[in-house]
Image 1 (cartoon, rainbow, N blue to C red):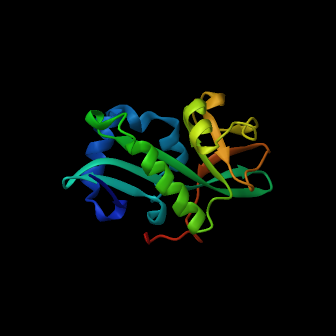
Image 2: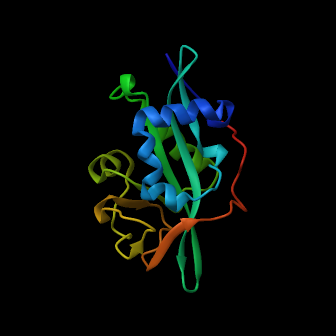
Image 3: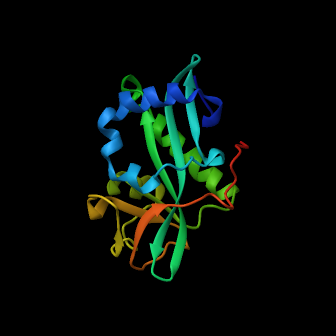
Length: 175
């Protein structure tokens, strides 16, 4: 049986090992890592999937912003969603996404969510689209159709994605 727990209750080295197995050590070269910067994931929105005492999945959510000439718009970046390769296609990633989205709603952080991912999957199951991201830039290569967002406060304006300090974001988990 899979149990979801706050990610900050898991030893960070174990999470990093899962991320390596799920995405490979070259994951640090991905644009998503550059966007997030050296920040800290939002604990209240980040979860782990545990089966028989072992980590089999995780999701992290990050405080980022769309930086414009006139200021910045706060966003929450979902991902990575990592699932142990032997457990992929078991619905663990979907459960983790649902948990993170429910937590974002509970904490009032669901107004401007974004991710880089498969539009067919994240659109169909979670309502993410590229409708308002066409003018966004990223600090690295990104396939435009994979730059997705959802929420009433998602800006449809020009800017570049980057990290931000979690000044008003809940930093402790409360599930």
